[in-house]
Length: 156
Image (cartoon, rainbow, N blue to C red; front, top):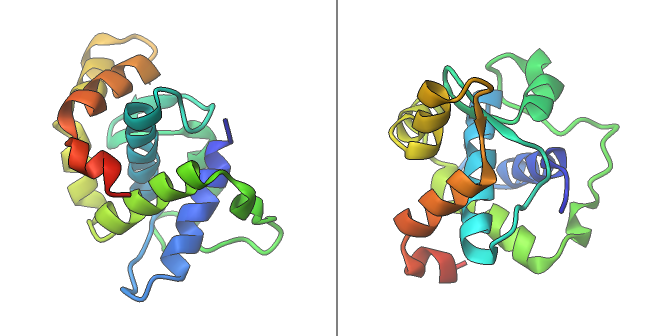
């Protein structure tokens, strides 16, 4: 497993090298991290990153990553110069899932992603039925395994 912060840095890298000129706020990043974890769990049966995901008011959040980029507010995230981008040493399966999520969901706005996650059972169950608001990997894997097509899982 890798850290969610490494996944986040790779998503920012993809954004900065995407010809579509898309933006990536911390809010949007949090939703993309959730989808990376979901697709990876559905495809490989194990978590992509080790940190937990929590149900917050505006959808799923990885607190450690949220607080790392909090100073950006709702501005477009940039790679910080002191960060070592060694994500290219990751296994191909990890890189391909992260890139797939960026390619397919990166063009959606943060608001659209909030609405999307608010309609999905992992966030709903944690938000309304969990005291600690943790969205378990088991809930995420169950939901994504049932709700994303096999075509999406193999087209990466």
